[in-house]
Image (cartoon, rainbow, N blue to C red; front, side, top):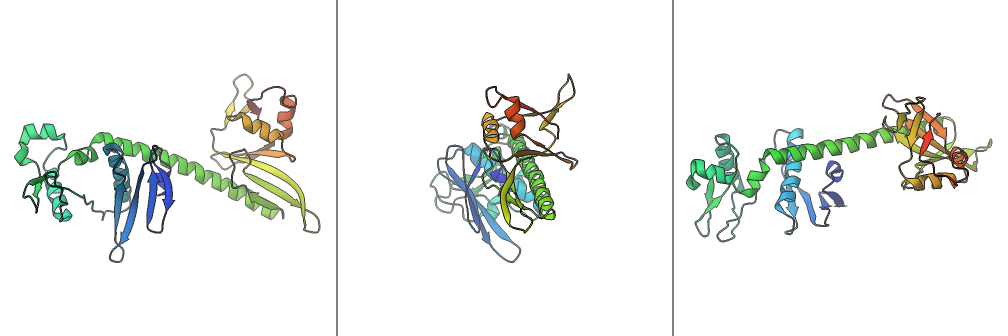
Length: 296
């Protein structure tokens, strides 16, 4: 669920005990639901709003399917087939999927049109509808897209994107842990800010000699990774680029000092006071400042 949440096409909406709802960029609902079976097994159902197009249905289903296969070899995918002639649901999904699987074992996964030319309609896998006794095709549009190299590549791209986001979050949490540990060992107080969009992630409050909180603080902006500092060619000075101008104003407006704390990939942590530095560099806000010469 966490990995799906960190993909661009899908955003987590609501999380239940055994289910999770997601939304597309257009606000359409889709999700997964777990039904526990025998001990150590269960069935994960994927569901969609009727308005959601086939493309997103395939992408969501394939992402879930491939993720489960990475975690366990004992995964079986079952389709809900519906007769195109009378709308009756195919009851025995296991038989339908076994027949499709057996056919795919000996056939190339090309488009239906290509396969019809090669094998003819009568050679494509089908099951008999119990109501109208017409044949229900198993190699339909959904299966064609599900097995296509294009869909596999899109899923791999989404997996890589979510892995990068989670890796960055993990590094940021490691830095938060280091700050909390350092401050605790110094006998002071640290607090995380629930909303850090404005440019402050944590604060440190100092204690008086008698152990009481003094009300005097430091504010921290935390960054983790090697991408935040660049070396300037003309003098090899390390430069931190301010990507959001409102952060500059916000840092300068604080009543306490603001420390920019950066942790690189090797675990080295460096820091620099930026509130007063920005006031001086901007002439108290009269000139725009887009970079900080990081002398941490």
